[in-house]
Length: 71
Ligand code: FES
Image (cartoon, rainbow, N blue to C red; front, side, top):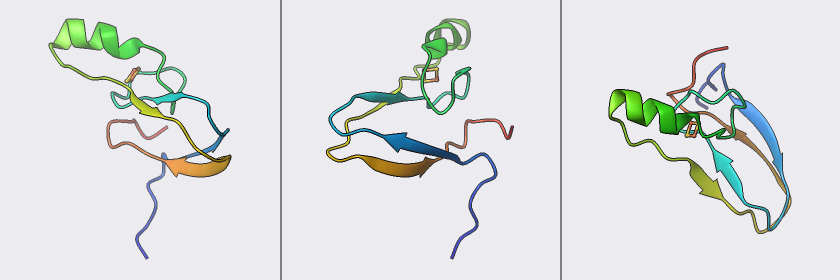
């Protein structure tokens, strides 16, 4: 079994609801996107976009991105 990253986020998701997850690490509402990637993209010339998820069932997940700071 592999060790989980410290910054892993447990999240409860509801069925048939769209969620946007942050991939850039700049969001103030991690693990969710707050659109901060747009400013980062302008300043740094990057092209981050959020990851969209629509669960088919209510589900609990744990998420982590290597771009998120260890908080
Ligand atoms: S704020 Fe990070 S992807 Fe949108």
